[in-house]
Image (cartoon, rainbow, N blue to C red):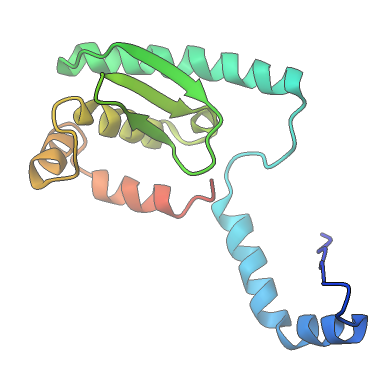
Length: 154
């Protein structure tokens, strides 16, 4: 593995080397954390590969959302699959559901948790006690899955 250190022009290489040397243990720990929390392939996709992965995600996620929506009586308007930097999913007040295409790299139980989380927002558009009660009715161990999801680097 290579680490690229970028420094301002006015800083000497010696200062940068000392910085890295002094913080080596911390840097190695952070690298391990990133490796352990990254369960999807972290690579730069070509536009063609991204479109292919997005189509695959649309098929997988739309089927799962439709199934869970029917099973638990949720009605939504539209499902969109996107590349998002900070969110696995979201729900608009208009009833549209958005999901990150990278969900397809996660375990099925976590995919279902994210989908159910967004479906429950159709009935309760906040994170109130009632919202979490709705989630728990469908996924009793949601707290564990939520914790696991928070540990995954997006």
